Image (tube, rainbow, N blue to C red; front, side):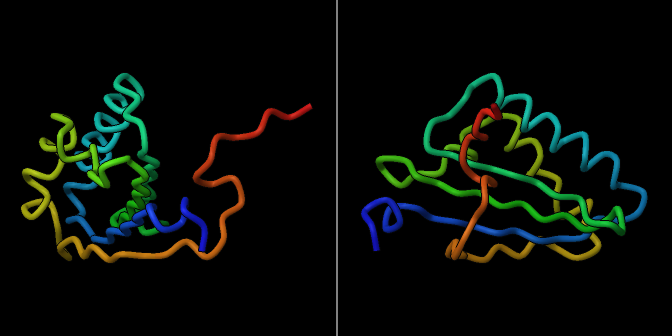
Length: 114
């Protein structure tokens, strides 16, 4: 295992929101990404998926910071997003640590196409 792989921590979070709260949840997520785009925290790779049912969400965070600390909880937009998550959910968030076995351009900067 390389030094890079040992310092990388991946967390996958899955949950399902109530039908009348789905758009609100998507709005919170958009605000988180807007703040990340503005702040550009180093050592964080983050993606959110809204599954085909429109109610289920999957978030994947890969943290590779020097101190191992995830910068997401320090972001006001993220704190706002998680503050009411339990009320929005039909099935509460379940966070699981994961190990990336393989990835094709998902968590690394997209290569410029010729």
